[in-house]
Amino acid sequence: MHPAPSVIVFTTLSGLGFGLLTFLGLGLPAVTGWVAFVFYLVAYLFAVGGLVASTFHLGNPKNAPKAFTQWRTSWLSREAICAVAALVLMGLFALGAVFFGGGWQPLGYIGALMSLATVFTTSMIYAQLKTVPRWNHWLTSALFLSLALGGGALLAGQVWAAMVLLVLAGGMQLAAWAGGDKRFRQRGHTLETATMLPGGTVRQFEPPHTGSNYLLDEMVYVVGRKHARKLRIIAMLLMVVVPVLVLFFTVDASAALTHLAVLVAVLSHLVGVACARWLFFAEAEHVVGLYYGKR
Amino acid sequence: MTALPERTDKKLGLVIDLDTCVGCHACVVACKGWNTENYGAPLSDQHAYGATPSGTFLNRVHAYEVQPDRGPAQTVHFPKSCLHCDDAPCVTVCPTGASYKRVEDGIVLVNEDDCIGCGLCAWACPYGARELDRAAGVMKKCTLCVDRIYNENLPEEDRTPACVRTCPAGARHFGDLGDPDSAVSQLVMDREGVDLMPELVTKPVNKYLPPRPKDDLDQIDVLSPFLQPVAEPAKGIAGWLDRVLEKI
Image (tube, rainbow over all chains, first blue to last red; front, side, top):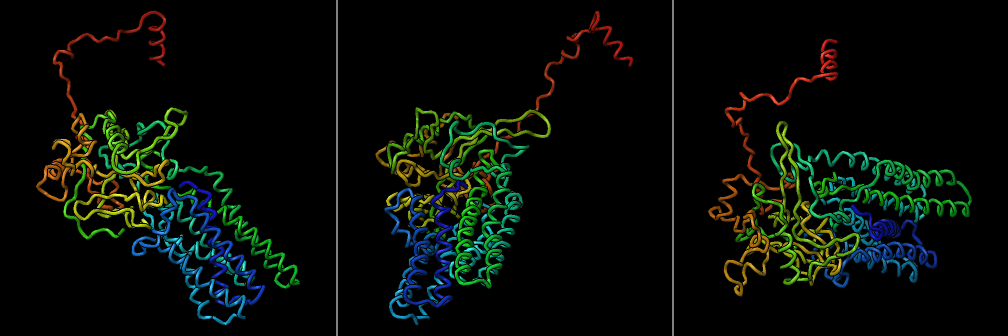
């Protein structure tokens, strides 16, 4: 699939933002006043920034309000509803924390749940697609959720939770890569099933047009395997290994050093997730590529 | 509403005869012409006269080569457009309700006034039947020429999809595949028509008729065994070499 920058930025930032909102909603940390203001500002910048970025890949964004109507069948519609519900609920909770000394905890719990639900619905947009075997698995949701929680814990300064959750997310990522590499073949999609032509081995003789088209640009992105392997290592190092090591060795350090360590860990994690998310799209093989002899 | 109907009154669709298609692309041109001049946003082209021309098409003709274990390969021209699936995965993913499957005839359509151009329906379709128009920013797909087939301003023989009407080889057939007695259903029965990518269980309405097996002609000239062989024994140095090498 084409790794569109808008969608990479969206899923990376909003995952982190809603992860942080989840922890803030749970009262971890239970902040008030100016400290709360800064925490919520960061969370909303990530979450809303991501959502705004996602509208850049729409061909016709003026109809966006209609995307709240089809929650019965569409995960994208459910995501829109969950995101707005989470932002409104957590906005009220933040209002209480910043101006009224907190204490509206039940609201925070519901807000945290909706924030996690938002990440889950985002993951299901991809996991539901049978046409992309690499994504069509529960590991996609497990990966998105564990990454959002790990990154959220990191931003919320929950050092031990962050270390455990990031290692968990790393495990999910490894499993998703290992399973995803084999799944297209396992599902048995071939040019023979795509064309159902009997009597022998089928190969593309001639494409329908000499030029490219929307389908090829959008769904038949091909990434070099050598680079993919290097990028996987870079992503894993920045996303999980560096943050966990930095946190682990500064656990008992002074407050200033811990803050610096968390900053380094957050930046490394952010770049790592963006890199992993690029691979998530670039490596995903859509079955329509079969018709173009590209699988 | 993007929920699929439980059942549709009719299942209008196409039957495409891969044995007959000659790969002339007339259906592609007719489709582009009709659907640019009529319902919805026109099918735009980008850099039509430049170095990298591309454009929106609702119907594309691929060409494949089938290589049997023995004997010569066979070329198959393979037109592909929306299959108007009964379990259309493109419809249910739509966040705005722009995509829908009609209860009365099973045609899958896009209401362009509601489409946000997110492209998710194109991702959900295994067949590459939906293309986002790069000029209009809305999703385009085969309408089964819904503005022809019911159009009483047209002479009756023109009330079929433009691709079917134009096909010079008679490789495309239009009708109700929900009615087992219809001509198209009979054709599918006789020729053992198939669904594309059946493992994804999208239950396409459109069917493809596989190419008939090629016949294998025997020797037809009864006299040929008695003719002189054309190859003659080599003479001179080549002949000497041939004899020497034969002995080694």
